[in-house]
Amino acid sequence: MKKQYQIEQQRAVRQFRRIATEQNPNIQMILPLAEILGLLQQGVGNLLRETGLMQAVMEEEVRHLAGERHEQHQGRRAHRWGKEDGYCVVDGQKVPIRRTRLRTAERREQRLGSYELFQRSGPMQLGVWDKMMRGLSTRNYGAVVKEFHNAYGIEKSAVSENFIEASREKIKELMERPLGELRLCAIVIDGTPFKDRQMIVALGIGCDGRKTVLGLREGATENTAVVSSLLSELVDRGVDFSTPRLYILDGGKALASAVRKHAGEAAFLQRCQVHKKRNVVDHLPEQHKADVKRKLQNAYALVDYSEAKRALEKLHRELMDLNPSAARSLEEGLEETLTVHKLRVPDQLRRTLCCTNVIESAFSIVETVCRNVKRWQSGDQIERWVGSGLLVAERQFRRVIGHRQIPLLLSSMANAVSKKSIAKGAAVA
Image 1 (cartoon, rainbow, N blue to C red):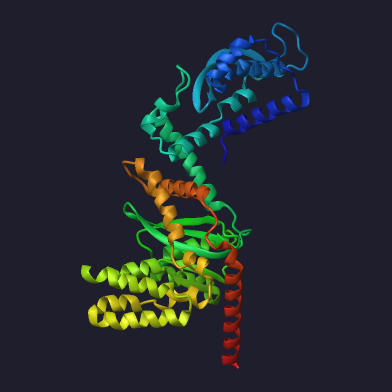
Image 2 (cartoon, rainbow, N blue to C red):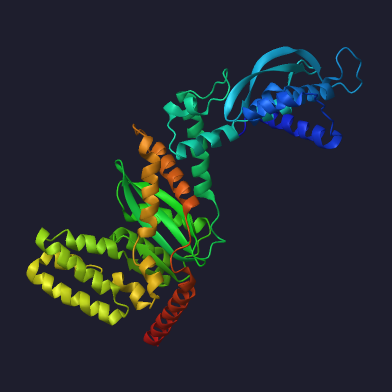
């Protein structure tokens, strides 16, 4: 619910916009060209401030509301009431400025819409967010960006407050943006340990190959409840889980269980082959790791599903003699690591969709963005930083490798769903 002063601010801005559009007054300033050139060399912000343009705009609004000074004015809506110190935001910094005060006939403060516009902190907060995402710390912010000798609002504490507000707004936009218009051929879901939390992230791959961050959830572990909550939120925002789609997971049982619950027969689960290789090899002594890793890579590199499965089953038998724990790790979820083979996904696209690397690269950008944070406090802080990092990663996303082969994947999944329906109908009959 908006407070009274916020309502009055918005009312003043609307009134100023009406004056500017309906009456469209002219503001004339005569300045030596050499002076303008000198100010421009110091930046456009210096030109705006030193030439008094902002002051002239405010005085023009005062003239429309209170009339000319010392003259009768029939349409007078307010009276001049002295001047006071204020500030305007120029180039992301607060700079002192003198403003005229107005009072209405009821002796209430008459706000100036132009002054409210010059004071708006939105651009300043976005500027702080953008610079901090590029690696600038709160401690160094003022020294780097300060343009005016009497500027303020760029101290460490003020920068931190602006970043908090901007990052909250960014995470809100990320978590609430509608997803119904997205045509997704695949969704990648993975979790990354972040400090003492587990951040679960869903990333969508569109039918045109473009990647989009869909949402994130914070939990102690990758449990079914957290993942189900994330998927339920995606449903509310427009994702249709009845559409046949590939779901690429890191291998956690909680992820697979939650996806099956929401998507049912339309879900094609692809367990990450990179995670599977890592899990198997980690059970082995050092002298056997390289050989087993090579055999796993060769098996997954095979195009035909039957050949790849035979190669993995052969390796499983070898591991039973060498290390039963590694063999059991390979056997667990083996079929789901070959989903892209079973769907006959073309080679180039298969290498993209066989693992969660597309989301792991986003996590690496998050780690880079967060490297300046030395002290972690609340869950809100973690969510804001991770969400901001994901948005930075999203700006760098390119289409997935092999995106031109996506229509073949869609066709294979549609045929597979159709065969399931026919088989299910025959079983019922």
